[in-house]
Image (tube, rainbow, N blue to C red; front, top):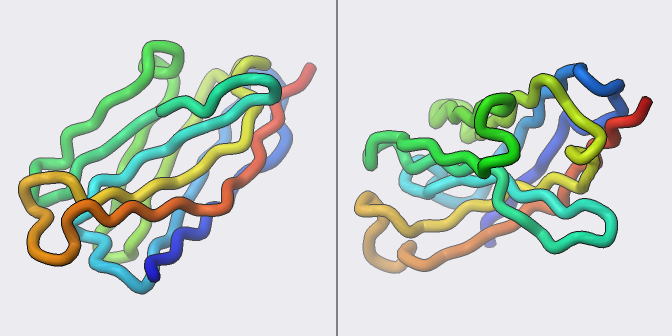
Amino acid sequence: QGQLAESGGGSVQPGGSLKLSCVASDFNFGIYAMSWYRQAPGRERELVAAIASSPDGGDVRYSESVKDRFNISRDDDKNTVYLQMNSLKLEDTAMYFCRAVCSGAACYGPYYGMDYWGKGTRVTVYS
């Protein structure tokens, strides 16, 4: 079964920056779309950012609340997806989860539809 391991969470003041990493193992990372979700206390889990597989062009998408502040990227040679978070706000406090989904045109055969989640890394923004 595929594995995802997030790291880089921590505590930061409003306006600060933090970079999350998610290292994938035991699956074909390069053909998977990757994404970051978050779940804040008392709120539903929400999609933060997504990036298509590199063979599919690496298209990126962001939620409205983070689109001018966060950046998602991937390094297929390192089986890693990143989330650079800038200008952090109190409302960004949440558990951040990495997700891998084989859903793009590059996905094929038995890999299509596979869906893996990491265990999450905590981000706390406080004044």
